[in-house]
Image (cartoon, rainbow, N blue to C red; front, top):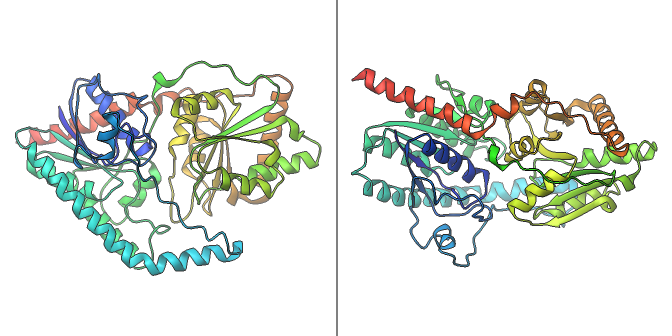
Length: 445
């Protein structure tokens, strides 16, 4: 097959939005398919060439041109780029007024942001069209366009029509998000989302929750195609052997996630003399230690925190492998379900217990259901109340006891988890989807 992948972010960007299309491109290429990638050339996260593609049979074009950030980085130039915009925190206000201030501020500026966003979408789309038109001599069997930036939907539809082929629309997030868009904006994006889902030949999504959200109001079945990990990234390293419990968190601290329950549980256990604080170490690596430490200060946890600052991808993997417990923070609300961050798959790759703390008001999160099925570690949902918190404390005490005694912390996951979320197997699913689409075309002829 000849497949065109349209994505905003691609390697050397290290964001999950870049890794997902790269992994599909890599394994589809290894499976013998001809792959062309049309990326933007923008960067969303740190740039890193530890995952290379020079030896793969992939044609890559940056529609923002040879002077885009990624193209310049690949030439060895020093580049500066803008990462994800941080929400204004209004930290000078008392905590109880901050959320209201954010709501008012972003509500007032939302019309201007909406117009500005559409100008950006249209501008980038016309650049995409230029590159797609330049490929007019090619024949593609399938266009795989990933949503994350809206212009990819326009470009996917245009390319499928241009090359008279089938179009797969991939959703990393819903287009319409109640928690991210104001009351007048959400219905607009909802209508656009419904139209996009209806137009595409097949839609895929990164989780069941996202699939259900984007399918709502349509008669279309959305196929769940998870993110994953690459098996070759697993390697051996020595763990910390000081009989202390080491917990690590690497990466971004999202506004929707909460780590306070971990600090609260440790404080309670220490108060009951069931653990010694001197035997607890929590490692953080990333750019958000200020936010991390502010939460820790409320529970007297600063003394057992270690800030590694920003470290590279390989260094982060080594830290994850050295620690005893892999910490993951996510959320599940009535307005946003199926949030499986890229860190979850890094946790699977590490082959050690994953501790998930789920904030939000909706129980039975998808990540908890995955733990019920695969037993990857422990999932604590904050909305579970006092009983759930007591069970969380018991689990934490158990893990602590094993480590302090020098014993191996229990870790007995269902082996299928390492197959289910491996990128080569996920790519085989995508390959089957493509083959079925092409088969339908041949039958129609």
